[in-house]
Length: 335
Image (tube, rainbow, N blue to C red):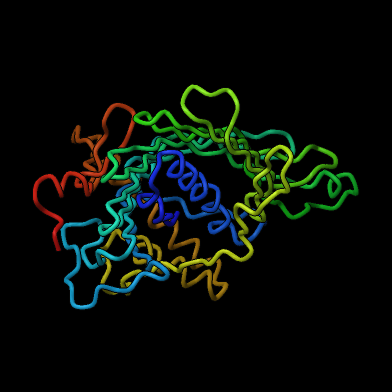
């Protein structure tokens, strides 16, 4: 989820909500380069991941030192810096934080899943939330996540093929809201009907405080084109994911990563999968998972609790230990 860095520059709360909505709706296509459902690695408790993103059309601040007290110590103040940590195994909670120092905007959130078999599909309910903080405006935008579904084409089963290729879609209703301004948006990810209909549809509406009618309505496909639909007017493009640029993340070389950073932790699995050494990849995966079980057993025997590295739990949320707002208030983060 790369930031829409125009959010803090917008002059009105209405405009800022629209840009938050635009960022949210444009974020999903980047993570789904294919409709085919694939099983991800099972994260290991304590696993971390760090990366940075260069911002298009924003010049690099050559000569400035990195923001060493930030989430990515080698990241620059002109980059989006991202860190994630697997903070729990049961349930499997991932916490994440990102910031852009120069724009004074940050994102903190957590997510975990519950899976359920639904006949010809598997439903994955995403539990958690995220908070976009626009520091210079003193605004926070709270948002939730849609559920995911691994589908099997019923036509393939009816025709007695062994298995058709599974595909992924999103479904469910989410909200984006700012308590300070009262502006909010509702987004519904529409699942494909059993027969007929289209895949990947969304409908989004944005509201002013206390209003019953939306001032903005968006329809389309979250992995395609989304258009603004207004009464009596021709539809206009809100987002076109086909032409939207994708910015690749940058990470340290594996040899320079910490032991529990994702690419170093899973390097043997990844290497063997790349060269189709399935047995070796399975052995490497089993080694990591068994080590996790052994360490959990040892902690239980010693009556010890797992200590997280970068996040702490507050009520039902996971909060990054050193967010930009806190560091600026303390006089830090001034690289």
